[in-house]
Image 1 (tube, rainbow, N blue to C red):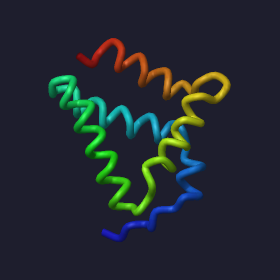
Image 2: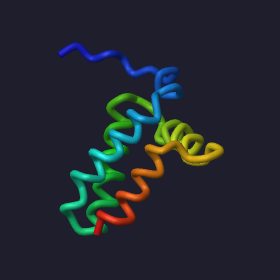
Image 3: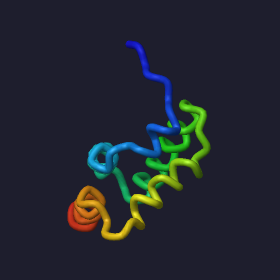
Image 4: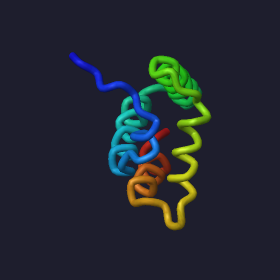
Length: 89
C-alpha cells in the first residue's frame, strides 16, 4: 500500500469532521479497558504515531487546541465530548 507522505500543511487544514471521526474510533476501541489503561493507551498510541510520522507531539496538540478553543466548538468536538461523558466508563 502506497502511503501519502505526512504533510504539516494538511495537518493544519484537516477537516474537523475527519478529526472527530478518528478520535471517536480511538475512544470507542479503548473504552473496553480500565480508565487508567484508556488514558495511558491513548497517550502511548499518540506518541508512537507522532514518532512514526516524525512530528513533534506539540505540533499536533497546537492544531487540536485551536480546534478545541475556536469560537463555538465544531459539532464533532461537542459530539465526542458528549460520547465520552455519557458512554465511556
